[in-house]
View 1 (cartoon, rainbow, N blue to C red):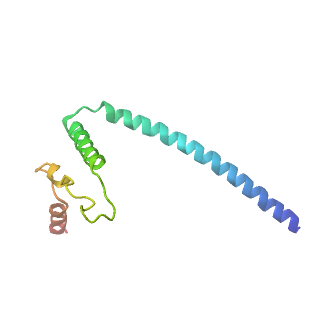
View 2: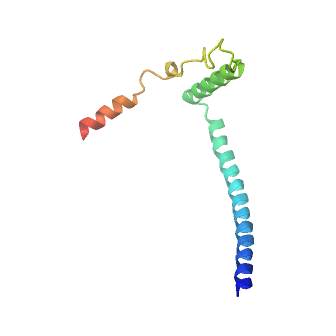
View 3: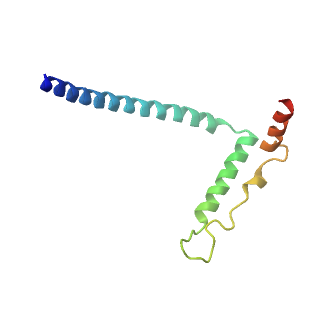
Length: 107
């Protein structure tokens, strides 16, 4: 009886591993498919806002990759001269504080 239980547990473990492996492979394939579809939709968007976002991320990426990050040098802070992203937010955007204040007034 003990050997049957042990053999059943081993077979269960092998089956579980195989099933999980197949499920993960299928999930990765589906995720890659969905990613490609969504990326295609984004690539087709040529609106002004989409182009502003692309320009912003291009600038941030360029700034980060061109910045020589030094460790333990003490001469230059790690993120000195980084762009202040807050300046890129349009002036008509509502802050979280404004939204929170409106929620408090309603409640």
